[in-house]
Length: 235
Image (cartoon, rainbow, N blue to C red):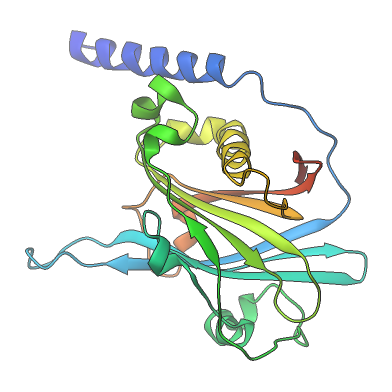
């Protein structure tokens, strides 16, 4: 192994150790019985100044489904990190059912009120995401968080955040810890507003690695129940 390769590996190890040390205070909260499922699709952009440009993820749309016994809560969203306005539109479950077809995670009879609605969204700068000097090592580029109201009947709400990072591939070793901090920060930004019932973190760590039919290769997700503003991870 040449000297440059050794130095590169050494630098990578140093960054990994620093991130691990900074995130070691991850709070251990008992996991819950409910199961959660998410269906997500990539929105791709094509730069116009190249004859055959690579695809790159610009945002995500889909839904999260949380089941508790026979009850099912559905939270549709369409989020473009860094843009409040583009992220406010809430797609209808019927539209997502047509998009995902057999992969649609909710029941076939999932209720849909048939009305287009808008979500409440914020897009903090990367420097405000709670990682201080580690922000540049994680290459956190953009985030948008939205309060998504349950589709159909019921008052439940979910905080959905989509964050784009460019620190592939080692960042996946710390997804749960990073997502907990990102989600805790998004909850804190709500101030005295009523806390949502659930929270979902989508960490896009491979925005430039979209493969046809496999958008899931670009991101990882963690879903929580929010109890007294504390996060309890749902498996």
